[in-house]
Image (cartoon, rainbow, N blue to C red; front, side, top):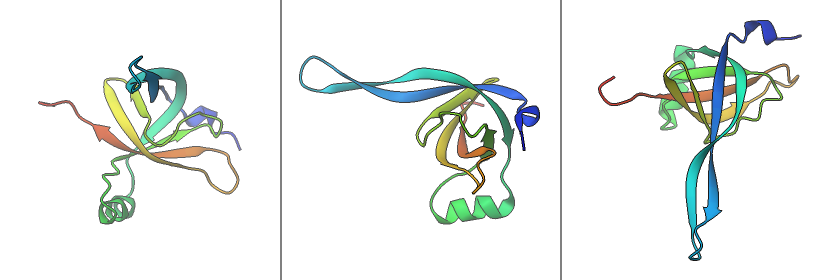
Length: 109
């Protein structure tokens, strides 16, 4: 099964990277890693309720190819939206990856 035809958006993957600061510590910055094909959906009511029970705000599901390098803590950006990746799961037969995400809204939006 191929889900490529369902992936109707391109999102940028941004990841926190630590670098030495030259004084014995580290600086962290978000670095763009790659672009990925994606489909963004809203989770079901039961998925949102389960997330709320665990203290998480799961606002969107982002479907990706199973080979997409997306990890917990990454940001996915595109079309004026930014999503924080809360977790990434795959079914037992890896035909896709699903990133459970939180939409980060800008102030005043």
